[in-house]
Length: 510
Image (tube, rainbow, N blue to C red; front, side, top):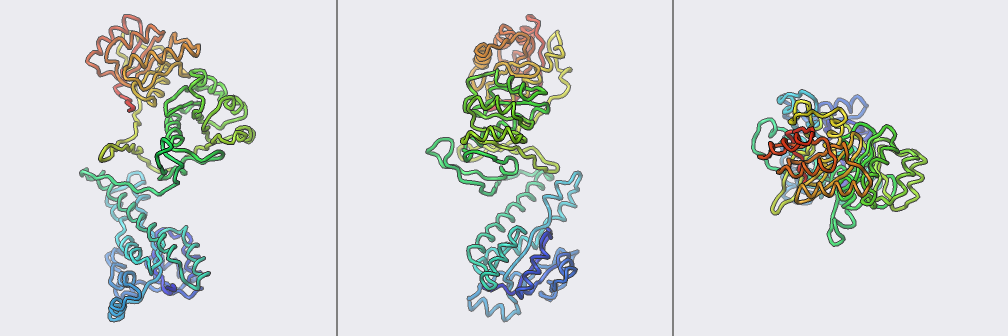
């Protein structure tokens, strides 16, 4: 299985010249196409045109060059099979032992603002995926490389094994190639479906990141798939658990609502408290004051680098995970004294023209797929439904509460000031009960709700919830509206001198 001939045709040319040069030193004949062949020759590497190999010219603006029996026969015929070898000999098919292909940049093309459909279609690779599939099917004999990161692994084995690669490496690379072509086809299908408005099917293929110790509970197995490491970097602590990963994601989604310096505390994906302040230490104090019991064993996240004063305050309670864009050296040293505490740095991968992420949940017999809840509020001043409009302070409090209530399990009620939460009621079957819990939490924490704003993730089905909020001290309310009893709620607010806004946007979180 010594590699004697390689076909190299790549869109991403990073490292390919150095790779080809090393192959050439080992006596490997190189066949190439178009721009790849030109680059190799410029680098002083001899490259045979694929048209010379097939005896057929490249044509149709390069659309047709590798779709030829001599190419696919060279990749597909079974070595050691007498009939296959006889057929290859009879038809002048020379074996190709190494295929190096990466595909036209379709994903990068459609990510460009204003890209035209015709431009995207021109970046649909046909010959590349066909060759990858042929070579991967025959991985018992063929080494296939789809990722420049694997160049060195191939060279290392060839040096150590007199020009050969191991079956284990060939198998791994073949699987990687099949995953690549699958993802590539999925990206094309998804894009065309969006453009053509056809009825889609849904498929998903993600790389394994890690197998977790267990799932939501110790008797459940679990694994993490995808690109989590592009978004978070673990700096310290034990391995992340299934529940840690859910909480970290919920925390990141919540903190993304705020541009001002903010600290949030979460437990079981629900916010326990959120505070904003130019001084991050004060932001922490506001968040923690909302509920001083629930944060034990919770998740803390901030959207500014964490310094020593904040680290000292946070370290006074037990937390599972602390997340920040960065940690001052002395703050990190202090927190790392707790060996079981996980410290996570948030990363900001730049994805041009990124579309809203999908939210995928399992149901019996299938999956539910929806866009992430990314609705934004505009022109609230025009959505006041009460006789009295909110003051500037009340409007700020309503907006703060609205940004938080979106991330609280339904039924959800949040009492808020302009820069902090005051009471949070989550996950109740009755909205009145959610309000009662939020009020009780505020009382337990010694916080006054006088002059606060109350935010509700969905409409008040009856006026009683709004009346209870007014009795607790709220002077303003923000809710979606849309109930058949909206007029009763508006009347109740007017009777109590409350200001109320109907957003027209619901934030159910089941």
